[in-house]
Amino acid sequence: MTEFLIKKFVNNYAQTEDAKVRENYGLLSSLTGIACNVLLFAVKLVMGTIAHSISITSDAFNNLSDSASCVVTLLGYKLAAKPADKDHPFGHGRIEYLTSLVLASVILIVGFELLKSSAMKVIHPETVRFSWIVLISLLASIGVKFWMCGFNRKLGRRIDSSVMLATAQDSLNDVVATTATVVSLVLSAFVSWPVDGIMGVIVSIFVLFSGYGIIKDTISELLGQPADKELVSKISDIMLSRPEILGLHDLIIHSYGPGNLIGSAHAEVSAHDDLLQIHDTIDEVEKEIYERLHVMFTIHMDPIETDNQEIEEARKMMKNILAQIDEQLSFHDFRMVSGPTHTNLIFDIVVPFECKLSFDDIRKQINDQLSSQKKKWYTVITFDRDYTAE
Image 1 (cartoon, rainbow, N blue to C red):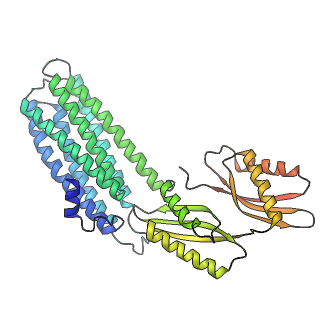
Image 2 (cartoon, rainbow, N blue to C red):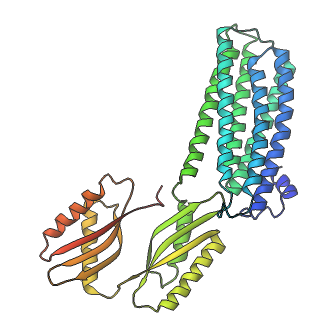
Image 3 (cartoon, rainbow, N blue to C red):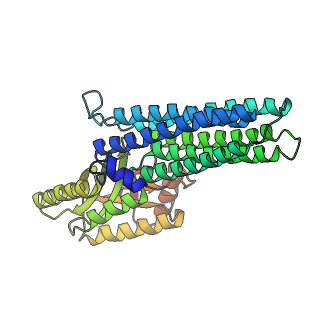
C-alpha cells in the first residue's frame, strides 16, 4: 500500500535528495495523516460519549492534535523546500528540525493534559459502559494507527526525515494509548476499580517520555552531531583511492538539514609531487564526492616529507610516545625544523572526547619523555578533536 501511494503521488520518488521530491513526500505524509486522524477523532469522540470513558475521549482529542501536527508538518516541508537566498545561503532545510520540535511539544502538551484528566478519574472514578460497537471501533482504530506508524517510518527512513520518524513514533504512541483504552473498557465490565483512570495515567507517562525523546534527538541535530560513520567511510574511501592522497585528517561534516551537507578535510600529499597535478586530482575528488554522496566538499592539501629518513625516525618516536600515553591519540602534519642547539617538532594531535587527559597533561607527558632523549627536542603542538567519532 505504501509503495503504491509513493509511486502514485510522488514524482521522481527515487530522487530523495531533491528538495521538491522531499516536499512531495511531506505532502503525502501530511495529507494522509490529516485524513486518518480527523476520521479517528470523529469515531472516538462518539464512542467516548457512548461509553462515558475519559480514556476514549482523551484518545479522540489526541487524534485531533495529531491532525493539527500534520498541518504544521505540511507547512514545515513547504518552508524547508524553499531555495537558498541572500539571508539563508545554505537553504532552509533545518526548518524540518524546528518542525520536529513543534510536533514533540504538541505530544508533551497532550501527554500532560491526559495525565491530569486521568488522575482526576482515579480520584473521582465514573462508571464506564461496555459496548461491543465501541470495542470494535477501537480495535479498528488500532489497526489504522499501526499502519500509519509503518507508513511514516518507511517514508522517514527513505528520505532521512526526523519529522516523519517523529510522526511514526506518535502513531505508535496512539497504538499503545488505544490498546490501554481497550483493556480498560474490557476490564470495566468485570471489576469496580478505576481502571479507566489508571490506564490513562500509564499511557500519559508513555506519551510524555516519547515526546521528551523526540525533543532530545532533534536538539542534538540542531546543536550538531558527529557525522554518520558510513558517510565518513565512503568519503575516506573516495579520497584514499587516489594514489596522490597519502592520508587524510580533520574531516568535518556540517548538516544544514536533511540532504544538505557541507564538508571539508585535509589531504596529505607528497611535498615533491607536481602542485598543478595534485590540484587537478583534488578537484576531481571533490566533484566525485558531490556526485556520489551529495556533499559539497572542500579539500585542503597538506604537503608532507615522504623520503626524509630523519623525519621518519622522529615520526616513529612520536607515535610510540603517544601510544604509551593513550592508544586513542593520533597525530598529523608532522614537521621537523633543525637548528644548531635544538630541533623543533611541529605537529597536531587528535584527542578523542573520551580521553580523560587534558591538553596540558598530554603536552607535559610528551615533553617529559623527550627530555630523556640525548637529542634536544622542543615541541610545537596544536590539539584537535575528532569530529566524526560517535
